[in-house]
Every structure is written in structure tokens, then in C-alpha cells.
Length: 185
Image (cartoon, rainbow, N blue to C red):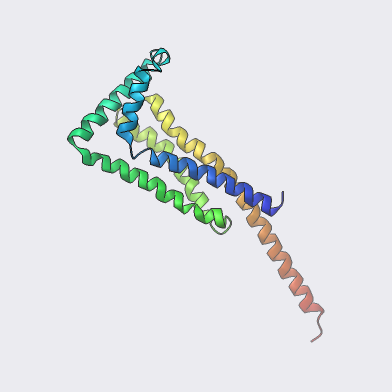
């Protein structure tokens, strides 16, 4: 694969990751509305299916009720999820660097991979403290796992580009030395 095809693939993977990051962040803004809508869907049109997954239905009921009560009495609590959303959007902006120049900004891909790896221990440590069900911990952890897949592929391809660039630089340096040796003084 030539460098331009590799660069195109890296960019596609970065865009895929950024779209997921943005969607994950933007959905944190209307959290209460989303929970109520999901609750209505589970007790409405989806009831024939939802009644067989009572663990999901009861969890969504509890979350929807808890968010509604909290937002009604303490609306400033939603400000925390606003900042969560902003954090996702701000991190997404950082990926403009590797989109434009992946080799120069490979550190952003490493940062993203480290962040994805951190999702799993955070979920495993903090979720039980917040009484989050085990199956939801798996859902949360999947964001880190699935986010790491395109990032790791982009990282590997970027390393390939980096090594190719270094090889060309060494060849050019060696060619320059040979020319200098051939020229009479």
C-alpha cells in the first residue's frame, strides 16, 4: 500500500473514532430527556420485547426516575453532564492534529489509546461504588474497547508511515554523503 492510500485509511479511522466520540459526548447533554424517552419506548412500542428483559426495563425505570427527581430538585447537577459532553467534544478536536499530520501527531493517537484503556478500570472500580449493574459496566467498558480498535489500526499504520519516512531520510542522507565523497576537493 502506498503512502497516500495509507494516509487515507488513517484518516477514515480517525473520522470513525471522532464521530463516535462526538456522538457519545452530545448524548450527555439531554440525558434526562433520553432516559424518559427510552422509558416510554420500553413501556410502549417495545413492550412485547422489553417485558422479557426485565433487568433492562427496571434499570431504565430507575435511571429515568432518578434523573427526573434530581433535575427537578437540583437542576445544577445536570451541569456535570454538560461538562462531560464538553470534554468529549474537546478531546475530539485534538484528533484534528493526527488527521492532518499523523506522523507528527502520533502522540494524540497514543493518548487516545491510553484513554480507551482507562475506561475499563474506571468502570470496574467506580461503577460498583455507584450501584451500577454488572451488565451496564460491560456496556460502559465496550466504549473503551471499541474505541481502541480504530485508534490502534490508525496507530499501526501511522508507525508504518513514520518508519518509511525515516528510511527515506536515511537514504537521502547516505546519498548526500556519497556525493560529498565523490566530489574532488
